Length: 342
Picture 1 (cartoon, helix red, strand yellow):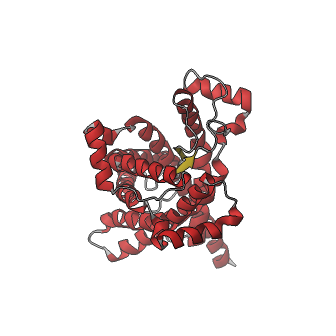
Picture 2 (tube, one colour; picture 1 turned 90 degrees about the vertical axis):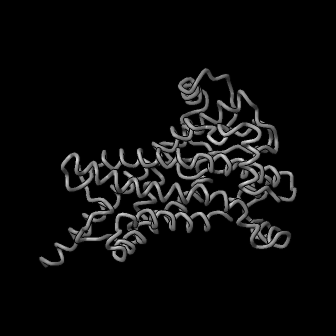
Picture 3 (cartoon, one colour; picture 1 turned 60 degrees about the vertical axis):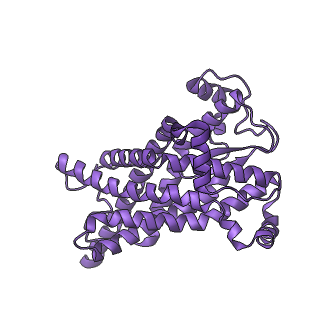
């Protein structure tokens, strides 16, 4: 099965709404496949290094990293180890047998509330920007994905950053969503509007280069594989492989920024849990502290786990997204033919 990719010059285009539906479908499918891997990872970490009350851990649903506050020791079901696991496969089997298969997707619904809108904004903005930039950058059209990917990530990260900060505060202080307005007002009165975007700097330092490299390499890889297999349109396997390769390259290059971003977000989350002032150190100071404590290799900590998580997530997301766009493009083409024949 083949379909027309986003970079193809198609006579029948799709609307922004259809792009949103395609990206939303891709986000949900990606989360369904990737979330169990992170749930098992958290369970394995919790049994070897119990998470005390007020501490934070990183949870990923394949779309975004979320900082979660441990409220009551290891009692929350989605990272509670009810028995000792002897590895990843054993953890999968025991969780399914003892708690049911639904436990592998524990913690997914609340994170999808932010992850899906952020993904929809990101992918739709990228496609719209890339099309516009290619029309203007005639001699340098190949560089359009680089610029479009970076700009789209800035927009989605800026929109979602306050929501992530508020969600962490609500969870750490055990507030209900009805108290959201008071939570925002108190944060703004205490530290100003800019406090809602605290932690955005290190997020952009990681995500913008990642996004720019990812889309540039993805479009180049997709073109290369199409030429190699002598096909005018990319297949699902070509998009899947291109997404995995480009995601892996971007993840490796931006790993130091990921380490710094994760550490800063965890520190901010723990300060909020203790209701303390959140005047964290700068990205450069945090990076210098890591090098002083662990050496340069400390900036590349978690290399293999990040690669194992990012590569399949990127591959599933982009291939599902491209398939969704192809579906709507074919649908629009059939409607156009029906209208012309009527």
